Length: 162
Image: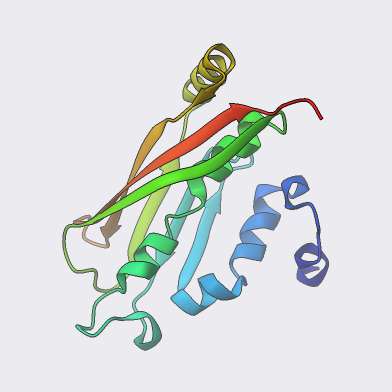
């Protein structure tokens, strides 16, 4: 079944469960030790974790910063693209990661946007033609301590008629 899902040309037609299955065998995520634990059916909430392995640690024996960012990269764009629909173009514009503490062991991040925020953004984009919302997420360790903060600016606009 995964082979058929992997061969899907239009990933936008996948369910959250199928996308989670694909991402959990996606080579960049496997190589970084990243796992998608949860994706709600409405695509508005995703939970991602990363364990520390010999192949994803840095010179100091802690989580490699690039892997910490990779686990956070696609989620706000995915949430918005799926919830706004194909009539909107959604892209990452900028990203910043602030490392607060060395990551050791298992780390986790939750990405979530409520229905109200998505509708607010839809209305703002239609009124202003394009918007640049900023969203934040935190990476925390098993003890709940803050490891990194990610800030993403997303570019959203209504697609032009073809």
